Length: 277
Ligand SMILES: NC(=O)c1ccc[n+]([C@@H]2O[C@H](COP(=O)([O-])OP(=O)(O)OC[C@H]3O[C@@H](n4cnc5c(N)ncnc54)[C@H](OP(=O)(O)O)[C@@H]3O)[C@@H](O)[C@H]2O)c1
Image (cartoon, rainbow, N blue to C red; front, side, top):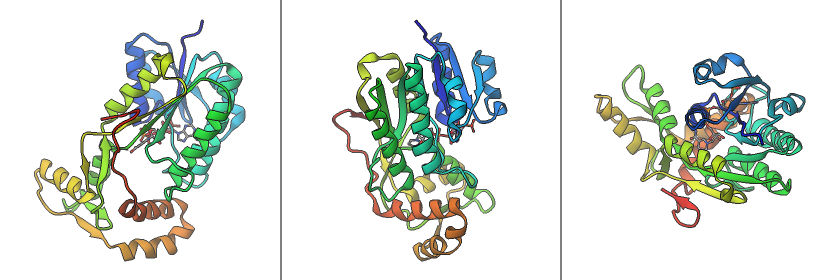
């Protein structure tokens, strides 16, 4: 029986940790990437690399052939034209799950806490649509939903602070947000791969604390030895950007709409049920 795990998104922040853990446990791993170079840091772990793109369904059957489990740890929130939550997280995931079903593989899908058809976050609605497709396929699946990755947001804050030392927060940054540690999420994904009892379940992962973006930016600046308050892009400017440049530049449009929604939506983590902190 095959023990091969194929990790789509294995080159990313979460995927890299998942691949490391799977290899440390002795699992054969195949990394699915759009560019072989993106997987260069994983080659010393002894992984196989396959070049495919979930937006090209024809590339997927060979990429998942022989897998016991296929992990989807990819997203299309950022990226040039053609890469979007719709093309990658919804349609791309569907194509990946169809190919996995045809190959007889189980699927472990990375999703988001708050995934819902009516979410104002395009990413969350796309993840939800793909989750529903997966549930309907009649194969064995586990969905892992996480809150925002702390490491991703610390990176974003550090990038904006580069020149002035003062991080930029889009909007007032006053809404509490739960942040998960990416190592905890990787642990949950690997448990889902290894544990057949998790099939048919949605596992939710969150972090120990809810913080506003202003609080997080202040903590990062202080930890970096520059205890300066963040600068804020006013909500009115975000609205203007969304309605003007955001219409021409899909990625900017998505980011500004997401920043606006981040101020309104409940992004705390309701622990309980399948969720754990
Ligand atoms: N970051 C967060 O705050 C957060 C929160 C909750 C859930 N999640 C979920 O956790 C997972 C990992 O997120 P991350 O932040 O670690 O990701 P990341 O570092 O931004 O990496 C994104 C990955 O997606 C892959 N990818 C993008 N478009 C693709 C396509 N068309 N075909 C195949 N692969 C494609 C990339 O692979 P190549 O570039 O090698 O092709 C890369 O490995 C995602 O499912 C994400 O939605 C993230």
